[in-house]
Structure formats: C-alpha cells, structure tokens
Image 1 (cartoon, rainbow, N blue to C red):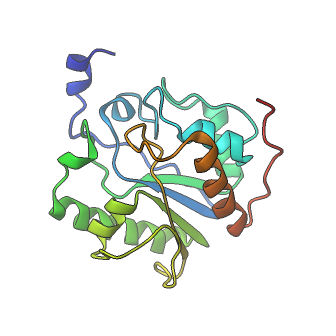
Image 2 (image 1 turned 180 degrees about the vertical axis):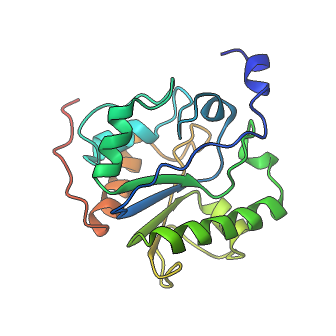
Image 3 (image 1 turned 30 degrees about the vertical axis):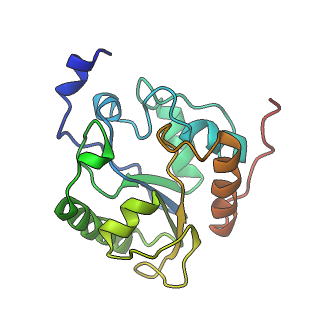
Length: 192
C-alpha cells in the first residue's frame, strides 16, 4: 500500500484478538496504519512479531498478517490461549505521535480488558509505552514484582523494526519465556 492510501486509516481501531480460555494476553503499543488497514495486529511487512512467535515455538507455523490474519491462524492463537491487543487502540504512523493522555486512557481500557478476560499472564511489548500509560518511569524489562489486575505482568521489547536493539532471535527468547510462564506448551522451533 502507498503512503497516501494508508493515511485514510489514521485514527481507526483494530479488533482485539481474544477468546475464552485466555492464558496470555500480548499487548502492543498501538496499531500502525498498515495494521489498521488489514485489521490484524503487527501486520506491517517486516515487523518481527510473527517470526519471533514462530521461532519461539509459540505458534506451529509461519504467520503472515500483512494482508490480515487468516481465519485458521486466528483460531490457532485462540485455541492456544493467546490473545493480542494494544495499550492505545488508535492507529498512527508512529507510536511517538500518541499523547500522554491517550496512553493513560489506553491503560484504563487495558485494565478493563484484563478484568473481563482474567488471563494469568499479561505481556506488554513496549517498555516506554508501559511507563507512560501506567506512570511507572523506572519499570524495567522482565517479570514485574506487582501484578496487573490479578495477572502476572511481564514487560518485553516491542518487535517493531524501529527497536534496533532486538532481533527475531532475542525477541523469540523473551516471548518464549513469557509463554512458558503462562503455561503454553511450546512447539519445537523451526529449522532455519
């Protein structure tokens, strides 16, 4: 899609991917324009989220969300107890376009979602976004000492290509650890 086409999705929302039996809720920062255009989380081509989930053994196949999630891929995630949402559910070209007020409002929306579905583990994929949404300026990556609405809380790196410190392999290691903490049995990683 061209930039001008994507701009029409600014401010749009993306459906949460959640179902009954939720064990692990993965939380992004906010949808990008491409993600909003296809209504699939982490959909921008080149985003490392889906390759990291596959390499970690969280999913049993390569998933390409760039044209939207295939129904069988959505069903696979839900059956495994995996859900996906965002702190702020408003599409922007970049997360740094969001205001402090939007982060706080998004944090409250996330609290309500977690209260409703009660996943044992919540993983926020974006340290700076978590710090802003929940006024925790000193939060660090990893398992947090405090729970989040009764759920175990993990902070992990965002898979965006703008996060140059991480690779698919390092993201897979972190995400796999979180999935195991949620009681999700991992598949053997793909041979690459």
